[in-house]
Length: 362
Image (cartoon, rainbow, N blue to C red):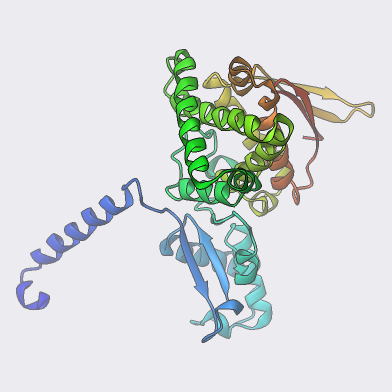
């Protein structure tokens, strides 16, 4: 039909324009999920499959394969004669070489079983461009300047409802008691938001920050009245760390990405510093940076984190015990992404939202 009405070729342009505009509308929708998940498995055996998952398109994957094969050809590491080959028909040695070249460009897959075993980690690991630290996702951003993933809200809700905190509150209340508890949280959240209103005038990022911290403090205060302060603090720390870990698995590049760099430790330092500098630009903290030497003349890069906005707000609301949660979470995430990088460092929590981070040899 298209051929019959397209004798002069103009209809192709019209149709292409329609598809292009439609695609852009979908892509720019607030609910558009940027991640693609590709699963390859034998007939009727999905549990034996492999998964590629991340913010990449089929075009990105095709380009990665092309440049990886080119890498192998240039280095003379393919045994096949010139020609066209299906990947699965390459020799085992050539296939391993191509796989290694793909991984160096941060394109790698995981088993279905491994992906399913990760609790509260539903985020992709593939990067569109991992050629430099500066091209990695969310480089130079923080949680309040980046566009939040459309599935983030539902994921955080799942964490709340599966937490020990929620189970304890539900078990200590009737159905109507739980509804009343939720209503009281909303009322106190509004009260704290009103009290923190002067912070909102500091910048556009402060609106979301005040909403989150006032809601957290409202829930924590009422949980303390219900379960006791010590128990509420334990359960809220547990939930905060679980929730924060899920968020940071999406926000930060994966440890495999940093490990693929020639100097992964330096890459982590550059990335972490850029994130903290953005926090400083927003007024969320003050970052001091200096270079020292150890007793053997080795280089030590020191980050000094001071004047934390989290600590300031929680203290103003009367809950200074919550001040160090964000630094604890950063300590956990730095350990996660640095696991295979060879980076040697020390993260010192100083209280009141302050910390010193010492990076050795970078």
